[in-house]
Image (cartoon, rainbow, N blue to C red; front, side, top):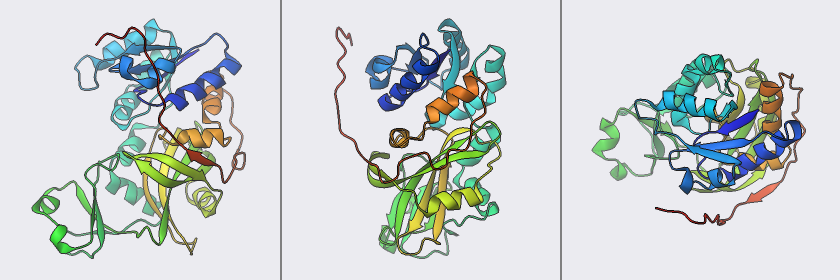
Amino acid sequence: MNILITSAGRRVSLVRSFQKELKKFFPESKVFASDSKPQLSAACQVADHYFEVPRLDEVLYFEEFVGLCQQHNIKLIIPTIDTELLQLAQNKARLEKEGILVAISSVDFIKKCRNKRAIHSFFKAKGLSVAKEYKKDSYSLPMFIKPYDGSRSVDTYLINEKSELRDYHFENDKLMFLEYLDHNDFTEYTCDLYYDKNNELKCAVPRKRLEVRDGEVYKALTQNNALVTYIRQHLLHMEGAVACITAQFFLHNSDESKIYAIEINPRFGGGYPLSYLAGANFPKWIIEEYLLDNVIEDNFDSWESDLLMIRYDDEILVHGYKD
């Protein structure tokens, strides 16, 4: 019952959480990690085993990937980055024929999440508020600009003055001109959500983002606040959503009725280890659902609120490495 965490990169805590939970059910099983350069991946070094995979843009990527999974007796795949989600979802049935399960959302849901305009429409259909998108010839300042298909805060701009706008902002059709939600008035939260195989919400953990570096949270705080009720009210069922989903919201500092939905990433987020340590045991539930075929019970309140995570840099040494 080996598990593979793909594109493992720096996700040491995620690998360790799956190692800990897998041993409870299958003591002899292993948690593998893969990466295009596993020797330079901290998570690959702490995994039970690792293997190198081709880059996603290589022609024979998927054929080689399937072969490697078969070679290492992989029974369950946990994806971690946006760029691999669609290909894995599209090939889910093919992988299952080879005896390999993937904890991944549907193709349609992933496509919605990759397109911020589409996910805004999805939110509005669910009754959630979103930031207004301006036409490029009619906007109000300040405003926030971001690409509809972007990630990790790449190509984003806070525009306070008209003089800060460039031709690039108007000519790039990918860029969205959005109502700015002032950080003096709103607090940003990333919520770790668990959806079972029937697309039903089982757990919601809001994480207050205190400090972010390179698009990944470094200081965060769990808070059992109005977002939990709000998410249960509007997103109790999300068609096509399974396993770990990360959703971003802005919550008004003085009026908790003012909540804006920002985006969804249908995968584990970089800050999930805080939710795991708070008691939201997604790795355990994934193992139970996908490897044991068990039904997951409701666990809305089974996590610790007001738990602070402060990350720091650490070292992993690889002896005998040849460049």
